[in-house]
Image 1 (tube, rainbow, N blue to C red):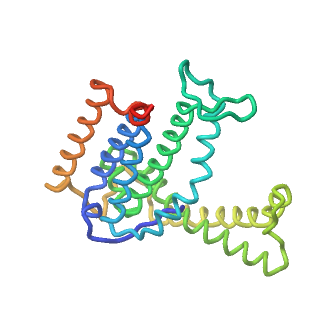
Image 2 (spheres, rainbow, N blue to C red):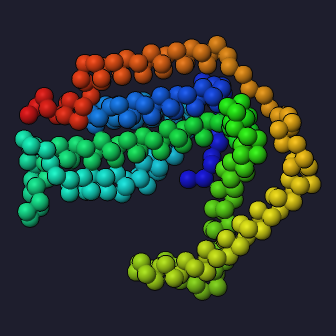
Image 3 (tube, rainbow, N blue to C red):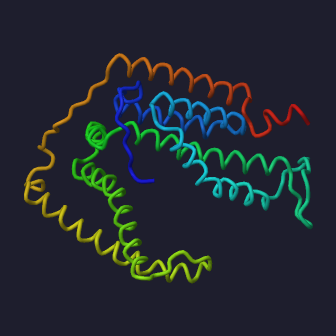
Length: 270
């Protein structure tokens, strides 16, 4: 899951990065506010629609969700060990452990929240180039040194993954066995891959540091100008107004009307 950017001309691509940051924060607020699994699932479907609007291949979203399913299952499994509230509805039992609908719904909601956070964050990076991200961070009063470090870090993830794959192929061609099922043997088998990859990453970091020094970046970072400029447009204000109204409506229904709790939907059938 390295930093991937898909160039395009969709609405999401044309939005200012600061607008995308604010939308991400509002989605986080909605995700924390809504406790109903179907409500979170609705936000996930909305996120999938935004992926389609941005022109991102559906296979990317599908592979990402499939890779996160074990974590989703872990959320449900761990919540089964939580003491159920009084009056909880029994679903089934595992030995002497009661599995209730309430604890299961809490686990499902937590897992869906995790999936939604990852999907929305990935949508933000897939529709925002690193250059735009750096300018947005500087506009948000982040020190230019920190913004540059974050940009280098994001751009290095894909390179690091490529180096790991290269080292792995080189070790396999030399007869190393890395595809073993035993987890302890696999841990030791990965050492000849991880150590050279870390060494190559350190060498690349030294090269980047020399390049920054050669360009006199450390002379006056605060006074440096940006090659790329961003500004808020009417589209940004319109999208922000829609999302603010949507977030305010959901928050009102949640905290004033009592909607979207853990048993909001399931409780009507019990």
